Length: 289
Image 1 (cartoon, rainbow, N blue to C red):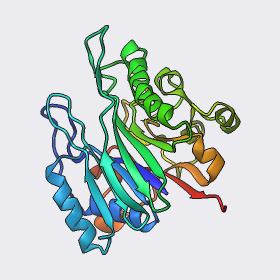
Image 2: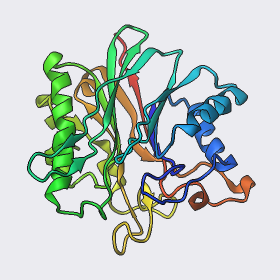
Image 3: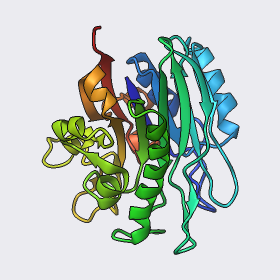
Image 4: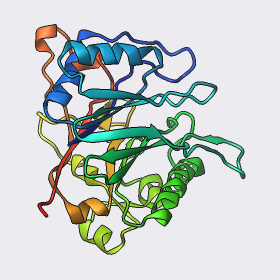
């Protein structure tokens, strides 16, 4: 099981308000892990939070989860960490980032960072974490949004060229929805499982299921803000994408979901006090050999 959350502790925008690790944040992280999440990617975290996260895990008897620091500062901040279950993952280390300076526009494309994990059966797993620039920086329809996807794809292709069957998972707050060109044509992601099985260089994107009509119990997106999309109140900016390996060797019990049922009522707190993003979660298990 894996999950991704833009937790809003330290927004990368200059002058943005920073937030402390609150009881609400603690409840959210602990509940995700207690539900069985083995990989939890976070963004909008700063280096000062990593020791606090490790202490939080120890205090809640979750010390078998380890925190991998993926933060890099500078003008273009990469604000990630990966929390992983050391009972199932034996090693984790960061790889080169996929960020590039676009040679045509000279703009900085924060495509993402990659991590190499080693599962207990000695299989390698690569994980990409992305927090693309906002639509205020690169508006919808901007060629730079497509190039963000292409830059991430370039890094993915390097991994696939070395081993075409390598399992790869992409976590992201893309500030684009599953149907946008940056995701579909830039990264190369489809909602069609048969299409991806036949074209193994594509990714399966299960978060199309989070689009469209929904009942009152389900939020209008992973990003809840009136400005997200006019008239909708939210957008599915947070997604987890899977290489075709997972359609062959794994079974999806819950392909993609927005986690909006973490109780915070006892904290006298509404979710917007914790973050403007909900976590997203995918539950899959390896097929029996």
